[in-house]
Length: 126
Image: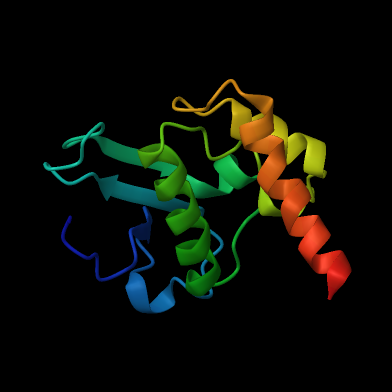
């Protein structure tokens, strides 16, 4: 596990200083280095402009931390964090399509659709 960042892996590259970041209009940046024991991304460094990546400016450091965390998970899974934003409100078809694109996805449609159908059946019974 990589060392925990004091700022949640977000920062601003400006002269305003950390206490003033909340009021500062400069963009947020994600700064993360994967653990050396990570199976696919060992020691890989990620430094990106968070505002450009998500398309909006996070007003608070808490919001920036949430978006940075989501981006880090996507990077470690080998995905582009800009592909599917939480605000996109994806349809079930989009979610299933993205799910099938994952590297270890099975090709058997029954294995992918079956659990979804059985979950719906259980909900209908309740």
